[in-house]
Image (cartoon, rainbow, N blue to C red; front, side, top):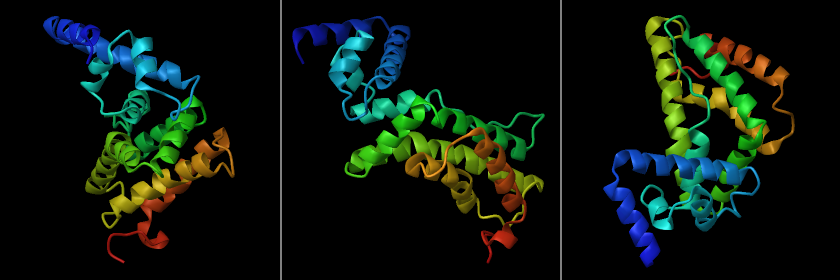
Length: 210
């Protein structure tokens, strides 16, 4: 660490948490802006630091590498499954799927594809994508499914882990293979087909007890 970086780090610490959080948000915003014009492979810590107006040491306080920053930058603005009091679990999952498809057919879909591609040759990138993005969101969806089972909205025999794969698998399949588009027709039809299967798991072969 050079003298400039050491001074910047010390200053950030003395100014307290609000200053620290502002720097963190600046890094995430800078990363999102950079990823609109460059690839994950070409992204560097140096360019992120310059864009955000922080030192590299400040970045390394929160993230071990550029992939982790890119993942957090995307994860922060992606839709989540939320269950409002006025909604059923089915409605919450439908809304989340529609929003997910909408986001993935834009620039953030490209970024997610690049992260997954990088992860095929770099185990650390793949682990970061799973831990910082996929598993966080999967846990929320799984909890929703479990809640639906407890209220009787979904069959109690439903295999929740397999249900998560069935819900999101088609989205990632189209995203990565691009054999068919992530269009409005897809986002309307997918939740309907999935919910039929969730309500009748035995018929489709993914109940918890075969």
